[in-house]
Image (cartoon, rainbow, N blue to C red; front, side):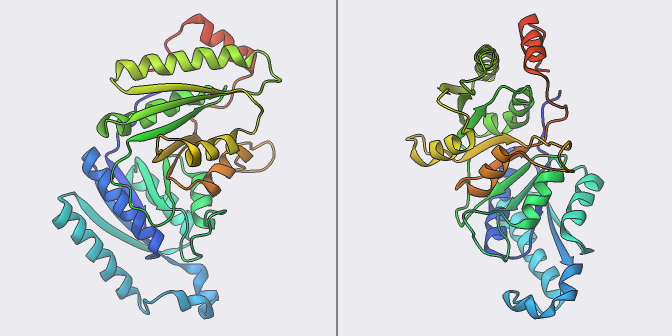
Length: 303
């Protein structure tokens, strides 16, 4: 398990209001991380089948899209002093984004929660949701109309899964470079007895590493029930900490169907009012008993 370095940021742009907000948020992230920004537009091949649905798009020709991309890149370079280029292809949106991620070695995708379908508070757009399901790099899903210049209060749910350790290593550069506070929220199902020991050990490991990174970390616990997603969403809305990011993992369950994301992840992606950093674990889940054995051995899990 290695620490993420954010040096290449990909921003899919469809010129919707939300994608422009995601672009501006990515600009600020690039400044903080010293990263290169790539703006990426897909001329959606499926749209050729439905020309009557283009009423939302003020651009009539491909050249209009390219010029608009160049204008955004020019602003990023000249107004903000960051490295930025553009790319565009004709194809299917999700596939084109994922292929570009692999070809360019992208470290993180920053994209709007909704495209031209509008700011539907209860649902992420279909392309965003598909990218989150299938991308092997982290995806920052940016909702609404607010540009996020800094991430200073980060909510970090801790469930009894080993991927929370990988999740910390991924968010570490954002924590350090933004001098952010980290809110560790331990959550377990009260019906499952041995989860309390797993959560305790995970929380202590995370707090120890946050202290070593000079990150201000707070710890709270939620043991009421197994409605974890609703707990996270309510915490964002009701807390005095004014959270500006939630960090979660996209746990896949391919025993049900390919690229199925669990209900917990789905609900937070669709309903969060603040950006959600979604991380796909590199390893599969461990049984609870095996997890506890690994944690009790004291083996160094962070690297």
